[in-house]
Length: 468
Ligand SMILES: [Zn+2]
Image (cartoon, rainbow, N blue to C red; front, side, top):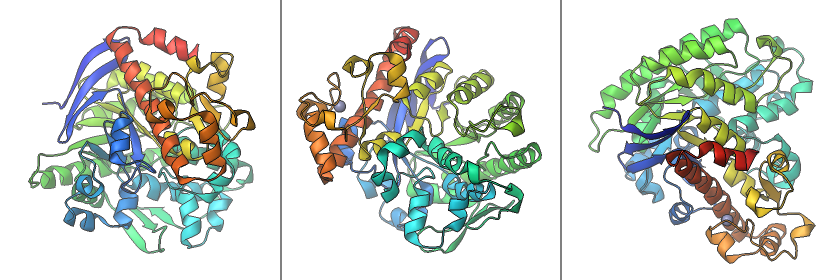
């Protein structure tokens, strides 16, 4: 029996309830990313007060430090980090593989990196984990333009290096390598070698005590050609089946009620491939489906130019695949979390989202504002600014208003833009907490409002209010 129930629909948009060991989740739902057993700057109480229902943990980071066996000994990730709500963990493949993909496609900056933790940290920062990087802190405005979502961030970084790509064939893997058995990678902490197999990934996630576990897959890039994509998808299918077998065998031995397992729908921005993948994953008996892969365009696939993260590709992909997926399974849009993309994805029946944007943006001075804040003159301007203000700007230095006057978060109820700006320019630690509270609340609250709109059959109306 499915753990998920759709309770209302408005067009393709769905409102549902997902049951997990650590409580029920009302969907659509946004999941803040807790890269290293912590959503940066936020305590579990802060997260709950910011309306978080579930958080995401990064398997790659927790496996390397402090280690899954240690966390298991400490009673599991929930107990270890003091969070009693549901946790979804990724497979770890995204970070491990991202390094390899970037290198394969000739990202010179990546190739030049040496095995030093500082460099690895700054690289890993672009790979889906929510890590602090000096380069991000120093140039928030420049980086802001490169950022769309966690996948977009990595791809945008690649794009920024794109002009330097000469010959993908001549480049070599340095830090990670895809083999049929799994992903061979080197730790960003100490350079040690590791092999992440489908079984190993599930073992780590079971040790962590995750509520929702993801299968290992190979992330595709728009620059992978058709032959490679075919081979890769066959490998991902094998990995997913192996993950499932291991999960079925070992999850039954757990003392606590079993976690659930999501399969990954891979692919590139190509209708036929995405449809075939949707049909395949629909037949595999997973408890839910995470939709990942490439949302970028490239000449290889008959598109006009290379674009590493396209909003249109996201919407098209979901439009193609969701009619082919079982209605009673939750659908997770991997790495999606910007305002316009949330509306676009929910419209096509996506139920769950995760993204590092709210917390990373917060730390960089990029704070969300709603159209009701009247800070910009029209919805197009809000969209072009990604519904954010840059609190670093001089114009906020005497501004008594809260970040978003319509927001009911702790920060907006108690502090002015002027104070937040002062904390930001003074590099005060409190800034990170207050800004993160606002951004996480803002996105959680928006998704909650979207859910209410679906229940009231007002989704389109709400979408038009925001996106025009
Ligand atoms: Zn607020």
